[in-house]
Length: 471
Image 1 (cartoon, rainbow, N blue to C red):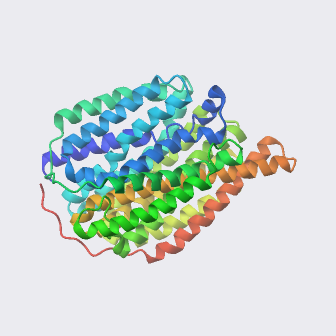
Image 2 (tube, rainbow, N blue to C red):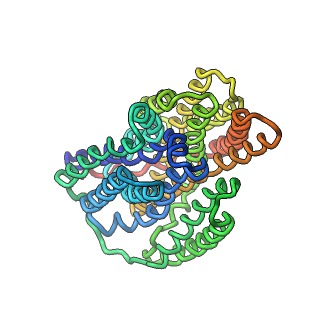
């Protein structure tokens, strides 16, 4: 790789880590926000869900964006949006404006990760992609895991606004460095711009995530719209979106080309990856609630509890990447998915008397499982595609990851809320009732993870693609 590409990859990795860190930066802060702003858990989850909803709406357009515009223009636009959203959230007078700031942040974040993955696929030789994708795993898996720790450290001494004020100068620095140092790699080309596809995509993915996320509010009687309405609208729009893309891709005019799904390695890898992402985000939102509301830990202690898991994922990611380059995905993905399943199964045993070291150990085990799964699945899935489909494959993976994350968050919160209400109705004390609800959520998560573990036996290493020339 040329120095120009190395500089670009370095800036993209650092910038992506910062922006994706913000996906989960509010998870530890939810109890504080619930108290300060007088909102319920189901409402507070919109701090995370609104971020992922925006990502799911914007990311499908990135396949088009990355083809039409220069690398530098895309990077500067993405970091400008993220910086503006961070500033807006920092000065927000209330919950509504705070959510708007998160949405603007997400608009920039949505473009950054597909830009990073497409750059790697186009400029890193196939024989070294596992190692490079290992670094992307640090961004995708470790940044969200470190978010709660970062949040806990800040909240132990400062208010929630500082979660954004601390990030703001880093975002500005990344923007300035990118504007000065990022050079264009590849050549933009004019591709058709289908407005109807964008509208259908927004309604489809936005409707699905909104509907899933509002189930928890509906359970508490606070949902402004019955969840079934946006879910049905989302499903219908998704069907129409798929039909239109299949028609447009015959002429090379699709907003999101769906031909990657013709590759068996891509489809299987995406299925297992989605369940893993759902488990990750569902756990990241439930564990802080459990640690603070059931075990009565402080925000600082909660953040520190979640730190070892994030560090473990970061430490094993480069090793997993090298092992993938040598042995392929199966020897890593199969034990990884079973580790995830076992960890979630053990989490069903957590209650108000569980020792803190047990919670720490099971979270580290879950992190090891996720670390074994993410890099091999991403590399084998995207590496199985033809080069002309890299940008669309990256957009598909990133979109579905956000949908899975929002679905996991909504599912875990909904089951917890329903189980807690049932426990209180049965005469349990509030703490015991919430522990019961969390038990139910992890039980469902373990069941879904077991299905992914069974599917992992079908994962195969794709035929090796020729090494790309250094640019």
